[in-house]
Amino acid sequence: MTQQTPPPASRFQRVLSYIVAALVVVSLVCIAAILIGSAVGGMPQQGSGQGIWPVVFLFPLIALPIAFILLVTLIVVTGRQRSRAAKQAQAAAGAKGRR
Image (cartoon, rainbow, N blue to C red):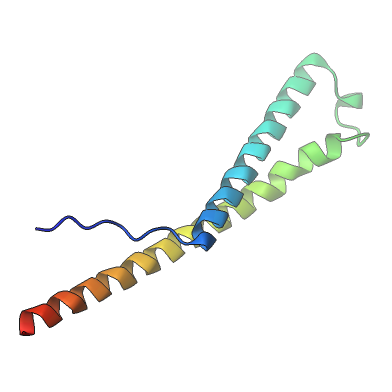
């Protein structure tokens, strides 16, 4: 059996994976800031809507579902690319066998 290497990731796949990673990391930082801010009492009136706290509260609520949807999209795109590559490899092996 021959050793098959997976096809290289396209630019779209790399960009999509970096976007997913960035959204998840920033969301986790926001969640940590909420936990730390509420523990030390640093949030104005415990999140009364002043300063940057509304953004810190809202960002994970929006970014995590978007990251999940983009992750599913990345899995589908990668699966389609690998399926296409497998079909091409199978067609090439079938053409060699007929010779």
